[in-house]
Length: 303
Image (cartoon, rainbow, N blue to C red):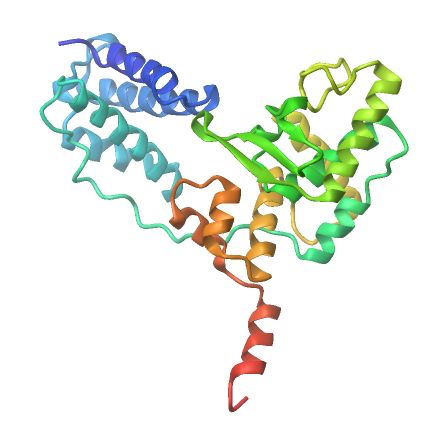
């Protein structure tokens, strides 16, 4: 039987070619599985390339999970166990194993954290804080407006091209997880900021609307990276002195929270976010304390 390392490589290749997983996701799966195999090799006193798949049974997985508790959160352990489970399910589908030894191993119990989000007034203060008096300012403002207006993942924003935006119909084409595409609406303010940025780009860099290149460019006119977007957001959030730390995904959290707090249907928000499962969207159904107290005061007969 093939060594585990070669099977892991085969699995990662399948994630990319068959499932359409991104390079970042594939690297995360590879890291978690290589960690599992490496630690198992130490326990089994074998060289890495000599670890056979039949020795990685339920006991080996439980031993690995126990070791992870020394330096990992329950959330991280759950993610790593999910990667191991997916790997063994792949081996069963490939008829390499009759059954998966990981199926009966429970996930660590974790509390679902409430997503970090900005109150509406602080979100508006952040968006309005970016001066549109330069090309970089126009770009940064358009980035923040687009993240909040459409609830985009930062990877979805940076992968967008010019022709993914339909200014006439107020919609954008988004390539989400697993290369799944969706059409989602975007607000007039975001589109106005985006149009102002692209028009400024024409004047200063000669890059026009009709060239189907990256929607957002760095100083060298190359595609902007997710890390650069995070730095841009951090820069303006610090200047605003916001009540909570803000990162790109917090813009998405805020988008979903504000829609639901204003009465939007949960399934509509699921579609807008591009979530596969409704349970993923349900974590946004928390409400602010102010909203909760307002509802209580209006509805309870004996305050």
